[in-house]
Image (tube, rainbow, N blue to C red; front, side):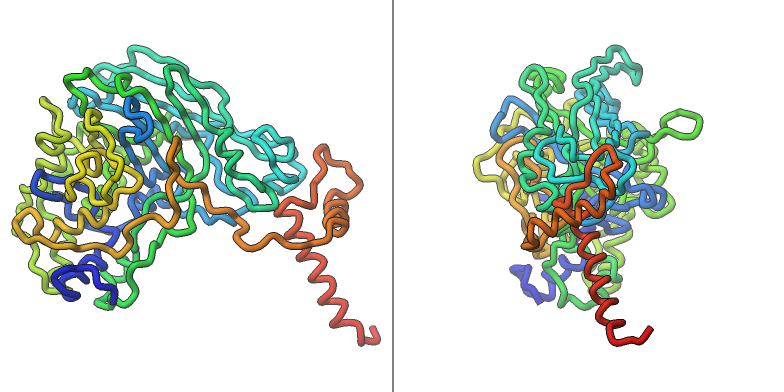
Length: 504
């Protein structure tokens, strides 16, 4: 058993069973106040019945923080498409073309968006006669061997009273960083990532492409809260998986109401175009884990289709949470008394004196006080450990939102100090020091590159291209072509050996 509590293994082990379940709330001045959950999941990875079947539209996580290397700017990172297996070709992981990927900003606390950043994507295929994502080693985003490419448009929409008052196109036809197929296909993926960083006016930057999933936790909680067996803990369930990231860095004064009101509320949504051509919201994300850990199954799809201004309908899920009762039944740790009014203000309003707007309407948003400067040495527990630049004042990539929330569910706000955690304290990959900050995606080929003779690779390429009738020759250095050729040759040799001694 992994020791994770200063008060003994019996108490500390409670943290492991909830590991991914409690990161939805925000911290009060004395500690963390979390929304006690009804179901655990990896942030918003497959959190609701309908969206779990359409991963291209599924928000997984949202981050917002004052940029550490440019403190006059704010960075927002929104992720989609959970559990991307790096080798999951040949189609890999494009953004949906029939979707609007939106980032909303409420800068006056009225639970309605004042700014909307909208990303829409287009896909192009150079050679439809091959199954390959790339037909050779890709050296740049405009490389002819990158067979399937995506670009995006970015618009800024200003709103008042939910009505559009102004629209500006900030970027047009910007290249997306591709899925990281592997070493043979993309020998210098960092170069491709760097080329996908687009510089906007006024020092703003934008990025869209694949990245390592930055969320870290032990997610074996679904096995009936570990079933009482805590021997398997401390495993980062999301290690090795990728997501599709949209990152946006903008001057802070662009998104705040004024220097006197520096708190912004942020959430992301996905709208999908239906058969009639209209867009319908199918996914929503503000604070991490809200839809998983607060809402029961009957409310999850409705929450994904709703707006923050309507969050009062979910109030009972907060005041009468399910998970503490389950913990008490299995581990005999007494659940806090209900109704959980101690959680309501923090969930709906933000923390007073930290990130609560002065005249706010209650609503579920990721709130960030942009006047709090970043620290040189961020603490993973954020405000709980005295670091006011961290969660729940926004959310940095390094913030351990699971541990911070676990430590309140067993009484941090009522004087029961604890050191609970899921034994996963950081991401498996280091984050970048500059925009877009997310770690490079895990590559599809993770072993050593095959030491195949160059002449053999050339012959395999010729065999796959046939008589050179296609518009784009298939280079044998392609990961897909190489793998297919090796399988064909290997299978042929095996068949020849088995039939060599036969008389027929």
